[in-house]
Length: 114
Image (cartoon, rainbow, N blue to C red; front, side, top):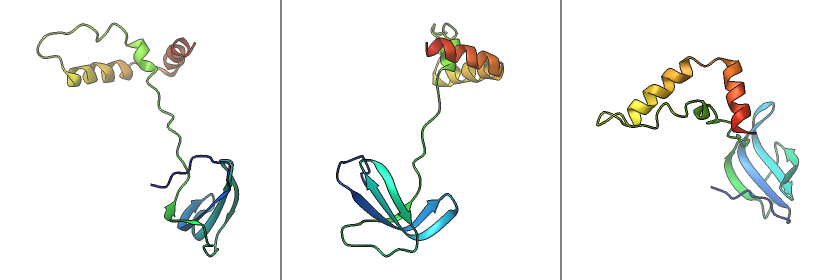
């Protein structure tokens, strides 16, 4: 995998295919300065010094949360014997989640992220 972490030096990438806002495009050249994309152009030839890529897609942020587990506090902390396992915890978790309404999720998250 290519390291795309921000650097002070400008960088350029050439992708055979890239997923752009308007759809898939071929021969896409992407220029980056200080961690920010400064130019994107399709139908471009690779230039000397470009990092060459086969496929380029936008970064996908990880937006999932475990805040709901604060609402489960006390429900699964005490072992129930030999039958207790990850799977029994998982069943309790899904049972708990099945009864949560959006307003409860909001309240739990507000408490978790005070």
